[in-house]
Length: 134
Image 1 (cartoon, rainbow, N blue to C red):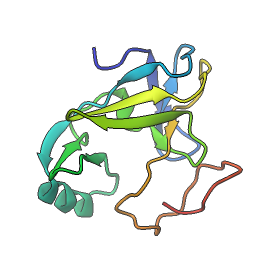
Image 2: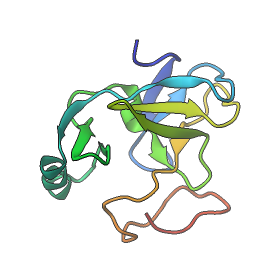
Image 3: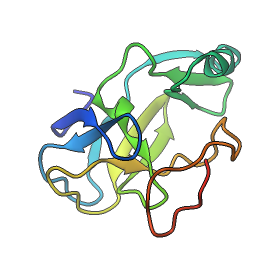
């Protein structure tokens, strides 16, 4: 099972579609693995330039996970400068864990870290500590 908790995708006030917890998730619990296709880093960067919305995570070893077409509910976790989840990249997987207790109905968010936007995309997370750009 790639997602261990019930997550619903619906419109987000942050950006587009978001992933929302349909049940309480305790701190430090694994929420699940992002599904996708493993592709070369070269192909990933080519696709990122062509797409309006990017769902690609680089592994750092010349490969990436492309969740653009074949994915699951975790594809819609939006960025936040004050996230409630974190992403762990290990063993050719992209895993999400709860940073703190997440309430039923709360949007799941993650600090993406460095992105292909290189500080040019305005952040819409509305967090008190928002850095302004991705």
